[in-house]
Amino acid sequence: MSARHADARVARVVAMFESITPADVSRLGEFYASDARFKDPFNDVRGVPAIERVFAHMFVALDSPRFVVRDIVAEGDQCFLTWDFLFRFRRFSRDEQIVHGGSHLRFDAQGRVALHRDYWDAAEELYEKLPGIGAFMRFLKRRANS
Image (tube, rainbow, N blue to C red; front, side, top):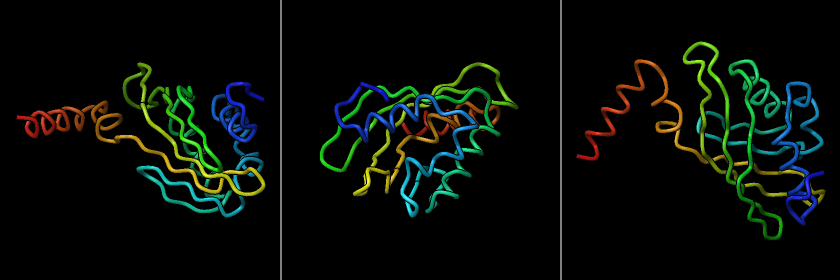
């Protein structure tokens, strides 16, 4: 268990996020409540099997995905994490990519995650890095700022 936070629930989840592998996806029920909700810019799912599919897809779609948790703020049954998500595209640039984001977690009475909501800017953190669409997104951003 990670010693990065005094709250055992938080430390356990942070350790899981920072070390998750494809083999760990089938163990997510140890960390998430059976009816947990997971929401990010591309997904809004409920239940452990659906959450497992989101994480499994991450490992299929990307090379070497990993999370580095930067900050932890916890109070009561809630926690907010800031993180860097590092990965390589399988089909585009092979350079390592970084997405900066945050997660709001709410724990149930058993200490499992009942709500996991990710916040990150898909346009800036992902679309701008893709060939073709990235140039268009950067153009739109410049136009909006002028």
